[in-house]
Image (cartoon, rainbow over all chains, first blue to last red; front, side, top):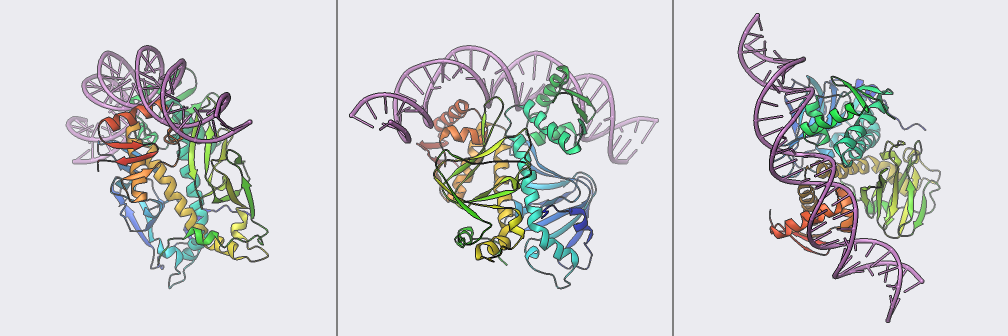
Length: 210
Length: 210
DNA sequence: ATTAATTTGTTGCTTTTGCAACTGAAATGT
DNA sequence: ACATTTCAGTTGCAAAAGCAACAAATTAAT
């Protein structure tokens, strides 16, 4: 039995009929949502890109996750506390489906196809999410900036089935994503280039070593 | 509707009758499993404690997750690659349930209660797992050892509803869990004590400031 | 009970990372 | 088309973290 899921198919089943699911539009740089304790909102990106970000008291920004089409997010996946203010910011114009976690376990009156498919597939979606977060942990637990960069590049390379790949955000954001200082990261990228380990053209990188 | 799940109850429904689920015993320090690509094993700890660990080429050990009773793990939650050898090591004598991911989506012939409860609740279990991994990310993305320690202590404090709490592993392992050098961590703990921010007695810590 | 092994605690020294500050390039807005 | 903002790229200096090595304390093993 194949437990893979084709998320796009599933999402295309959405229709305006389902009363439990809202579709909303957000412009670039708008805040899509701020995580609130006790609320259990679930969001799916139909179109666009967004980041889940945290700003520390000292102003340091961390990109916790980067979302593209078909990605899912919301406070159900987070233990929201007073110490961590989390918000999701649109990086491009976005089209978002919003519903409550409860509705995943309760049929809607219209018994719509989107809703029933959502219910059926929710565990697979959640398992996929665990996988993607674990990949992030894999990178964050690396001890040096160099290892983090190479770990991340390796992942992108594997995912794109090519030694050359595009980093999906600006280098400034990449530093926030790897949770390191930008200038220190730039320096490390310079060393990696000098040592012939990587090549770089804008945000297109190539891994030269295995 | 309440979407919380009482995992212990669910696990107690296990009976030897279900042909798809095995129960195995492991002694302290034994390797429970090594993650293998394409296999989709799921394990639940009935009794004992275990760590998911990664050893880097340079010998550095990272504790990716720490499991206690009722925790769930297995390669379904991981994108297993050649670059990351992951294994789960028993830290105490363990009693483990093992089954394949497929069986979560297929009834067993005996139609046993454990199995059907597993199927029903799997998405909730997976969502809980996302939450717990995200808490880990929250800590790993902190920039300094001090912030990582305080972030982790805060979490333990919140979880135990008390300013005083026990760290569930040795300080050596804690360093591997926070992904930092042990001696540097010890130094930071010393500073935190000197500054009156924490108190420490063995692996029992107290947070003195808000 | 004694030995062995592991864990804790500490410290000098080195390396890595972060911070601040600035320049030029690119993108964006009006 | 020009001004403004954001992003990339650099660098000196300071701070933090890592490494190595060791002694003392604890825990486990025989």
